[in-house]
Structure formats: structure tokens, C-alpha cells
Amino acid sequence: MATTNHFGIALRGWRERASPGDCGLAADGDRRIPGLRREELARLAGLSVDYVVRLEQGRARHPSDQVVAALARALRLDAAERDHLFRCARLAPPATAGLSRQVPARVGQLVSRLGDNPAAVFAADWTLVGWNGMWSAAVGDPRTYGWDEGNLVAGMFRSGGPAEIPIAAWPVRSWAGDEAEEEDLVADLRVTAAAHPHDGRLASFVDRLRRGNPRFARLWSNGTARAHVGDRKTIEHPLVGDIDVDLDILMPAGTDLRVVTYTAEAGTTGAEKIDALRAVRAAASSSPSRPKSEISRAG
Image (cartoon, rainbow, N blue to C red; front, side):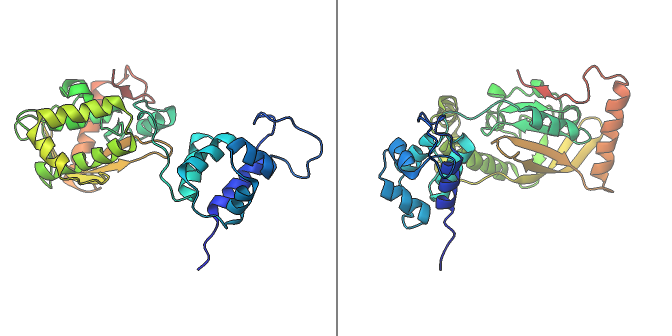
């Protein structure tokens, strides 16, 4: 069965879009189409003209990593376009040097707009990098958690374990149990470590946990790798009592950040208690010192 030549379509489109001047070539007036000629792209990428033709026409379907990288450089593709070209060739995009622990403005705006529900932003390695006011109301101020490097995985694998040391300011229990929650986080961290093999901070972090925590070392050695997609939790809140909530994980497009939210189904006791926390928070500060549009950030 014939398949769409996504690689060739993208390659030709970007070649015809490219400016000869931007690619270091002298523009001339004798051009029937804008952009680069095939022979110019071939020369810039160090390939034969015939091979570029076959790639565009779909007669060559399996370019190597080196060929795709050379074409991306020649065409001055940005990171998103480069990664798309690799995927069109059925290749994994090149790993970035390090994962981001910054909160883009649009992600901060998203979290602030979720202000009626507890929400926080985690980096791909589960370092907590931002949260809204309802997060602090539901599970306490993250600056009091005592996590090494502000990292959820480090907090989960502290000496003694979550059964003895609350993971947040007070206990937050997974309905699946501590072991299942730990396995989910380690499996997700393994996916991140594979995607960022050159991130020295992440590699050191994993190595310290492997050497210092037998529970982490055992789970890391089992090889499970999958994204953590959500959970069902009970927050043992000191003011309103136990709150049953759904934990959902959103990944904003163009980032590898995790936006974690706690919500309760309308009409449930959990929803009533979340409403009570909103009321307490509103009463505690009728003129908030922090504008509603802002989120708190680590560091």
C-alpha cells in the first residue's frame, strides 16, 4: 500500500521557502521558483543532487541520522522543524543538551487561570518549579516540604518512606498505594532520562538516588518506562479533613513540563471541601498581596 511521502513533502516545502541569502548563497535573478535549487541544497548538505531528488520524490525512504541532520542545518530549520523532519524519516529526534526548568509565560498564565483548583508546574524530572495559591491551600506551601532540590521523586524516596514522612506539608495518599505511586514516578523519570542523556544534573540526581535509596534502586533496575498520566488521591487536610481528588497531568505543547492539577467531581464531598478551602483562602486575604495572575515559583 502506498504511503504519503511526508519527508519529501516537508523537504521540498522548506527548500522552496529557504532564502539563498540566509543560507550563505549569492542570490541571482534567474530563478523560476523562490528558495533553493536542489543542487544548492545538495551542495550545502554535502549530498548528491540525485539523492536529494530521490528523497523529495519518495524513491529514497530511509535517510540516516547524519543525512537528516545535514539537511536540517542546510535549511536553517528551528528545533521543532528539525524534530519533525527526523520523525518524517522515522528517526528519533536528537536529544537536547538539558531539560528545561523554566516556566514560560503562557504556562504560568495557564496555571493562574486554573486558580479555582490546586495546580502546580513540574519539570520533566519532577522538580517543582511553580504553583498557584490553591495548591498551597490544599497541600501546604511547597517551600515547607523538605524535598531535596525541590524534587518530588527525591521527596518520595526520602529515608523512612511516604508512610512515615508526609510527601507534602501533610499526607497525600495514592489510592493505588505507595508502591504503585513510586513505580509510576520512577518509570516516568526513566523516560525523561532517556530523552535527555546529556543532562548532567539529571544523571547525577538519578545516580545519587540509586546509590542512596534501595527502594529507588530496585524500581530503577526493573526497566519499566512509561509516562505518569494521573492518579486518585486522598489529601489528609488538617483543616477540612480528608479530600478525595483526581490528579491529572497536562503537558503543554512545545514543552516537556508537567502541569499537575487536583480536582473533585461536582456534587461530591471532595468538591465541597475544595470549595471550603477557596472560602478560607478568600477570607484570609480580602486584598491579596499577590496579583491573581501570578503563580509562585521555586527559588
